[in-house]
Length: 196
Image 1 (tube, rainbow, N blue to C red):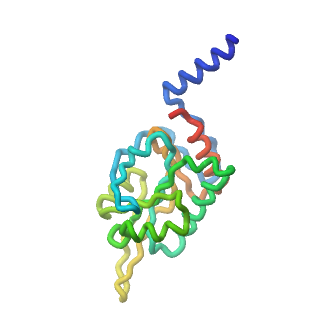
Image 2 (image 1 turned 90 degrees about the vertical axis):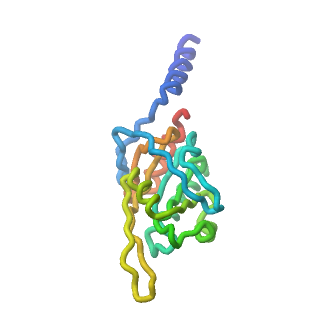
Image 3 (image 1 turned 90 degrees about the horizontal axis):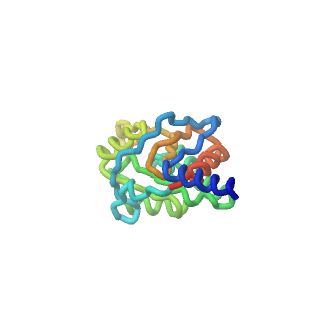
């Protein structure tokens, strides 16, 4: 009985200290050795309502920067994130997924809603002024820039393709760089298992 009590005490002390799980070395996963909380920000979701990043504390968050006119990278990555939510029998759905638009001039909340609806109801789209979004992206070491428009006035936006894994305390813990679904699921599961 004494050992079981010690185990409970250890679990309680880990929870009190906000103990972090050790993320293993996995292909395509870059572990942040000194995770710090991402500075708070507020953008508009696909329902037209403001959403503060800090309101997601208590759940791991996977953050991806992209845009709805993206020809290939974004649809592929969003498809992978949808598969991630469906992996492990759906046990990873407690992790939030944020799709932050790098094309706020075209990506209105309504446009985000229609774009994300067929992909997954579990993905939250966020949009805002591109200047604000650039400052937010810098907090994740993500970058984007608009290319010169074509003759038809259309343009492309080059952007980072990584997915950023943030823990329940709002700390950037790892970056997925072409990681497999299995590797992303492993890290996400570890973040979900942490106290918070």
